[in-house]
Image (cartoon, rainbow, N blue to C red; front, side):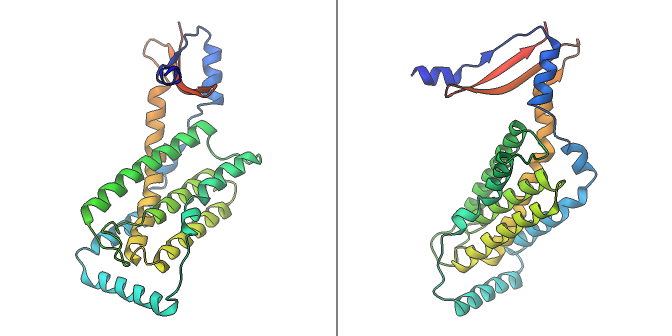
Amino acid sequence: MKQLILAILCAITFGANAQVLDSVKKDLLTAPDTVKHLHTKRGAFIVPIALVTYGGLSFAVKPLRTFDYFINNEITNADPDFSTKAESYFQFAPVIIVYGLNLVGISGKNTFIDRTALLGLSGGILALTATVSKQTTHRLRPNGADYLSFFSGHTSTAFAGAEFLDQEFSAKSNWYGIAGYAIAATTGVFRLYNHDHWFIDVVAGAGFGILSTKAAYYVYPYIRNALTHTKADGKKTVLLPTYQNGTPGLAFAMDL
């Protein structure tokens, strides 16, 4: 009970030293330059939106569903005994790479706190989208397991992670993003060969995954800056998460 109470309570700190506040903001909560980045590259949304649109059209355009059945039959004929659980690990690989690179001293675009918040926001957007989609579309899986086929959760998670990897490290080398997307595509292929999803589920999953991360990088600066800003009277405030002795909390600091 003590730990639960401590976890709920916020650690509130009032500081009078503006330099300390500036240091906290600079070292821990450096604003990611994502608003400008996405405003200047709106075309980056075209591909994932096209993938999602393709998936949506499958509910109204019969030839798209016919192609689904064709792909599934071809896979069955090519390798009827294929079975693997590798996609359950592959889907998380791009995110693991991001933090693995950080551990070996290769820094990404954002600080650890910002990067983790961005990942959490992307995951939240994707989880909500997937839940709504699966429950409303009611599409039967190729293997007949259930009616939660649209869209592929494994594939969307993998592509969300691939976009996360690309966002953080593409400035250092495009090969990071290429590696992430190759892993994500492999995850989708495994879902097809296991007959867990139709081709169109995988395509839409890729689109939703990419969009969730791009959306997170777009809105996060606004959320972050709303929590760390200069008030109209010139006083600065900072709100940031804390974790000490196994107890999570929040720290608030304000000029006096």
